[in-house]
Image (cartoon, rainbow, N blue to C red; front, top):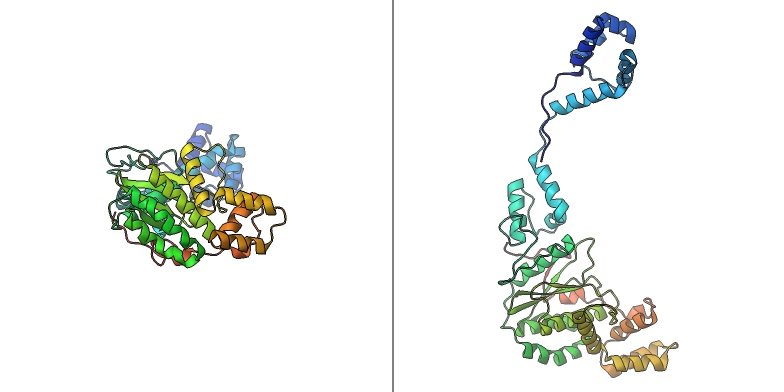
Length: 373
């Protein structure tokens, strides 16, 4: 709520009252201050502002704190200031709740007058008014995101908006489970990730890639448009082959288990494909185990590690990757975590984002995807 400043008299009005109270004339004050009547007249009429120096002089002249005169000038100046643009308060209110500036920069909403800006933000969150944001009703349920960071929630809604643009077959849990053996051979070639989006659509799962927002560290999310339409959102925050497959399989397990229907499940799994998860919820433990076994069966990985550690050569890694029929980056990612050496054989880590963006519906990375609000 804006503070209203009533039009006030200039500070000179109060100085005149003080002169009257003391029985002084203007020339008396001019004598005390050591200035001409002409100079003093400009101050008393409000044509010349009371500077900090003058406030201290008047304070000595009338034996009152200098702040009294400084505050008179401050209040007078505020009373004469122009009313600020209402858009400032609206933008400030919105920015305090959501990363609106970043949303505008990313092209998710347009910069506009206050009313239209508020309307766009409400539509972005699929609610009637901002009083309901950032709450969202999934099917007949109500899910509240007030406990999640605003940037994370905004990212989620962008994922959901784009997912609605995709046409997918009816979701089939059995088809998705049958797809897993078909996905694993793709792990040997980084470019093969481009096949994943369409393979998932055949099972009724929408895969969307949305660049992360500044200050957020999201790897993926499992959410549902309704009880029959699952969505996997990935950020590719860590543009690495091992991270992609670990996060993807993690989210697929959430979908298979029906996780995330009442409240989207955000995952921050780190950049190293770490399969350990002490103290995490059961559904996360389950998804982590499934992802780890999918990439490299844990018993095989542990056996290799115990036999070779601490002298694990590059040749050992390449040979084991060949046996497991995966790209060496998958093995390297696991070893980096097990050894806590994230620079180990880093040369084998390869980028996948450029290949994935060729076929996946994506937003960010210099491009803005169309989405109806």
